[in-house]
Amino acid sequence: MNTTQLGRVQLLIMQVLWENERATAREITDRINQSEPIAHSTVQTLLRGLEDKQAVDHETEGRTFTFFPLICEADFKQSATQDLLTRVFRGSVEGLVAHLLQSEDVSADELADLRKLINRQAKKKGS
Image (cartoon, rainbow, N blue to C red; front, side):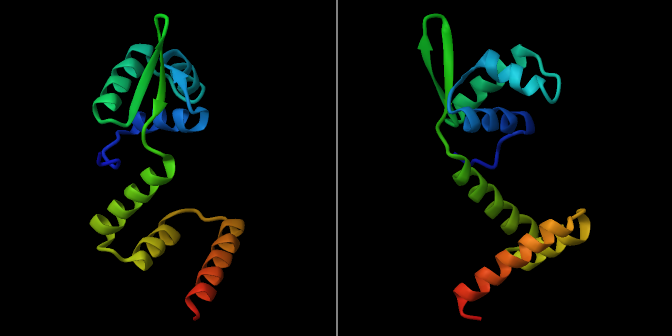
């Protein structure tokens, strides 16, 4: 499956499943409704689409379907990041990071954390 082909709400559903490991459609709907309104029927439809994409599967418990992810969050992030890096920034990590630093409001704490990551990576590379 090309994991970067998830829509925004499909990604919200996946995030609920990654966090909880298993959830019913109602539990997913309730969780998403904590941050934005969504109809239960929409969640059910999107879950069927995610099953078609082989991103999730379900087990039946009585009349209730309990859904679980088939792809892990780390794999999704790796694939989505690589796709963005390749398609939008032509493989340039520097270009991606420069764009983020110039266009996003990065806090002083985040900058300090980024410096630490860069220094750690530089030590690994022997620079």
